[in-house]
Amino acid sequence: MTINYVDIVCGLSWGDEAKGKITSQLSLSGQYDYVCRWAGGNNAGHTVYIKGEKFKTHLVPSGIFYGIKSVIGPGCVVNLKSFLSEVKYLNNAGFDTSLIKISPKAHLVTEKHVRDDRKETYIKLGTTARGIGPCYASKASRHGVRVSSVEELKEYMWDEELQGNILCEGAQGFWLDLDYGNYPYVTSSATLPYASCSLGFPPQKIRKIYGAAKVYDTRSGIDPEFPESLLDDEDLALVGEAGEEYGVTTGRRRKVNWLNMDKLVKSINLSGTTNVILSKVDILESVNIYKFSYKGAIINFNSIDDMKWSINDILNLECELLKTITYSSSPQKI
Image: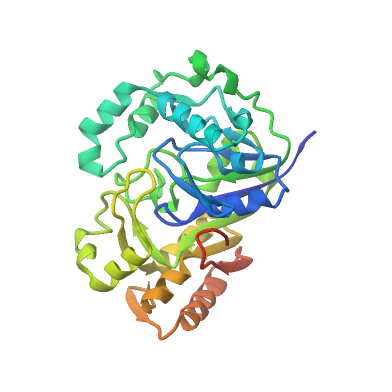
């Protein structure tokens, strides 16, 4: 059996864009044989609602909730203790954890990696202190440890043969990419869709790219583009509280800013996004504040409909590959 097509869910911002929700709803459609993760480690977090119940994962792809083989790819890094804890959590919740597969080429996050992260980059860059950066550094310098050497993961090893219809689930977001983000305030892996080909398929198999963003911007960690002064803005504080903007992995308060349309246009175009989903429309409606920035100016709107109309106008004009624009007002579904 060959690969028919590949669909990809990627983040268009700084992470926390509801990629888990989108992947979950696509998985629910029953059209996919595999759901795969191509990068990152347990520094990411996805929140998924199954029949009204909330579940959180950090490494295992969302296909696990729907009985679909869920692959952690060769570009990922795996913390053994965290992974086994997540498997236990999912197993206790009644999900079939035998569907979880790990590429033997993925790398192992060691305790030394975690210690180095806490000592060197956590304070300076605001990382999640999960050892992700040091692990990727070990991989790049060719003295890392692959998960294939860990006996405890033997039952999860993957034969690296994708077949049928594939859904790829991104981690973090476009502006956290190692190359395209505000370096060095970035993650340590490639967050753009092209990196998903490391799972074992040619780019010609890609059918759709679902780009996830919110109708306002948020950012965890340290970044001069998101100064501390944002926390003092009363309107943004209202949005942050209404949106419960705290990190899934760390619990840290996220900085909130108005949607940057210039960056959104660029991330859509460079990622090749064909279908964009903008979430948390209900949050702006709940505080009755509607703004975005465009061409260096903050633009105010009287209603969400006016704001949507303007977003649609800009994206349809400036994003030639974009086919659909969808707005979501629910944490549980698109």
